[in-house]
Image 1 (cartoon, rainbow, N blue to C red):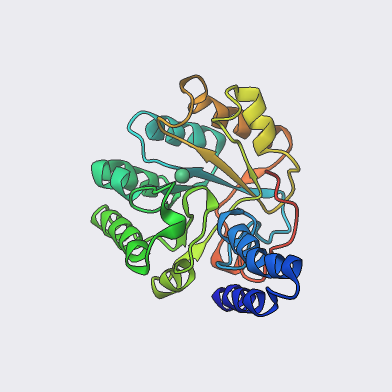
Image 2 (tube, helix red, strand yellow; image 1 turned 90 degrees about the horizontal axis):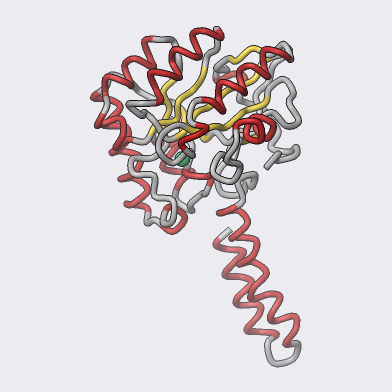
Length: 258
Ligand SMILES: [Zn+2]
């Protein structure tokens, strides 16, 4: 993609004097394309990000980001047990280092612990250097290793990619996981709206994204996930953690649901 970008700039300079409009398009077009592949959660150009899994059953994958959290995680574990649901917790390394006991509790309850960067650098991850990306990945891996967990899956903050991410993930055996629907808790401050959003266009193989911790509005923390679990049960869906074979060959196409 860098090549396309540079080629666009060179072509723009070459045609610049004779065709200014074409030059502008050539100069900025590749930038727009690049920005799309970095910032759009559904884009697949820089990193292959799984947005569905293969299943013949009425199953979905519940993923919970931004923990572990000393208030929410224990309540979520109780809730998931009550519903017989399995989930993947995409945890932040710093939080894991602060609460290794919660990481162990998640794993002991049969859920998956996955990697969600070490510091959750929302504003800067897109432009992090190769060393910066490696630091985020390795510090998070180390925090999880100390808690006895070796994750195989990764999700960048809000799905933002980075040029150096694909290679860094490959080197660490991490698969990038996106989502097909998300609750958008901070935009929809009430339980019903979040649950409706997270289960929109529900179909077997959907990947649902919800959050725990202080970034979720206080009134809906845990409650939104409870409502999602109730909705899933009403519609006969089981929450599972898919195996790696269910993620290979998944087409990136399909509606984003965001
Ligand atoms: Zn996050």
